[in-house]
Length: 477
Image (cartoon, rainbow, N blue to C red):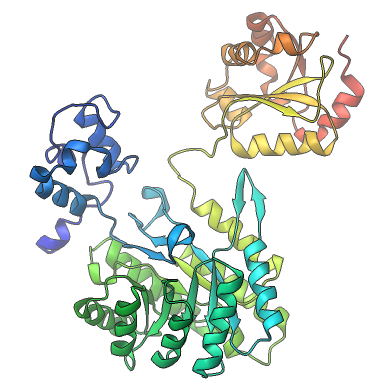
């Protein structure tokens, strides 16, 4: 490893003491931490930013700030696409593997329109993309962008299409054409939109670079199945002055699938593990290619191929995807997969503890509790609501761990349940003192009853049985 590469320390190798040595060491507490060492630890874990240290922002500390920024910056550069508050960020990743730290900036998904579609079709697809929404474990899953493709090779038609899209959405978009003249026509239709230009190649790189610099846009670089050429183009564009790049090593299906996975993996490894700054940019995948390569295939076959390519690329480091299908069975599995990959592996997915009021309960309504593990909470709440039960649901802090594991690990205790009842002032809300506990917490029933003074009823082990259980067992008197 070269000296330059050795300086590109990984998250695991970077120590708070390395950061602390470059901080002002005033222990002023202006950052909200007790001392500079605590702040350094938060910086290493990316829980705080350099800008939260006011002394570091002073002119005399400019060199230290620059050194710290170099030390802490991610090996995969963060690139912004779009303008104003609608802009999205891609890249910005610190590690190659999710378990090493956590991934940032979930893979952006774009749906395409073309300049040969009728206006009604363009508007329909834009609205469908914009309105896509799915609630999943407390998060709203959405699509992110519109990819505008030139299939007519007519600058005027492309300009009209870009203008039509801009009239109906503020979502960021991608201008897809290898012809710089057509790309410029699209930019003229939305000069302040700062879209992603797709794409520079070995034949058009200079003209596309000029457009990227003139309109302050990020630029995709395309070299299918040729990582050496891709790196050479990226290096040339960086030297030319284009700083925000997105790399496309080509999306291949069928017999080319293995090569595609290998290319994406090699590029991310070179940046994250070897500190190759030229390849340290976000990656773009185009599962839409299956429609272009197989125009005679049925929509179902192409949609299936697109769906599995998208899932593969989300798994293999793609930071942005261009899709054609708007079918729910294509999109929903992929946005759920994306959500699962882009959670923080260091922390269980949890909700805020406290009282939840389901329906319109009264003084005779049942009181139940569950833990604050997100999947458990939303499952239990959904089962109660689907049963049409007016009730109180107490969410007890178990540090984001499910009921059975929390009981076994002493993260859920009788004392915590009693304290939750007290904080929620449940004795003022109901005239009975009956608490239904999860079946998987049955072993705590005696302790909870003794500690809280409430009568304990052991509920079902599976929350789907709650409606039946209450119908048969619940009596507030």
